[in-house]
Image (tube, rainbow, N blue to C red):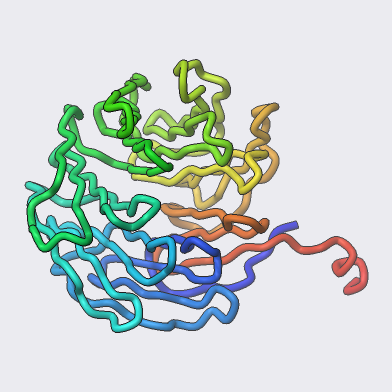
Length: 297
């Protein structure tokens, strides 16, 4: 059984690296940092001119980065709440943002079709690299060691091997809403506007699994894998989060979150704990131990 452990007020949620903190952002132009355990607001970050579309935390939780419809990327100091850098260069709204593993580079993906790489330690305001192979907007970014995974509205998943200088492209034939790596680094997971989530072999591009049953026709919705790669998860426009068995492809759980579109989700790095976000609220879900349930009865 799964139940809500905490509920907080915001629009999109992301767990930070150790799972103890939660970062939210939304149409009020702010980022908010929360304690997952207590459900309390720790700090609010103000500096964007329009809605904040994505955010990420550094490996040591000392820095945040965020992106917005105002075309900017902001680097924040977590402790002080101050803007460290405001990065301009994208020609349209910036949909997604990620740190690399050392937090020395911020990667941002925009509706302008480019991924820009920004050096967080340099005082130069120009990106150190621009990846402009996409033919339409960038909807999702993920970073793992020396690899960058991007999803685009042009229906293509692009994997950049930054160490080897190579680009690998897989064609999905539907606008992509989210991409991510599996925990073991062998596969990629992709959700798209044909209401389908696909598991691909990272090296060959072979489709290993396809997961359907949810609704994703209009919105940029998240997908992810559970912390042990046993289940595939996706948001849905019908107010649920869907869990599929990775191997069988069958729906294991249809989690009712609310009446609107579930837009964002994030799985805890080590525990069976899930964040969901919809219509101004973020929920923290956890498994209920069966023994305690019996005792309560």
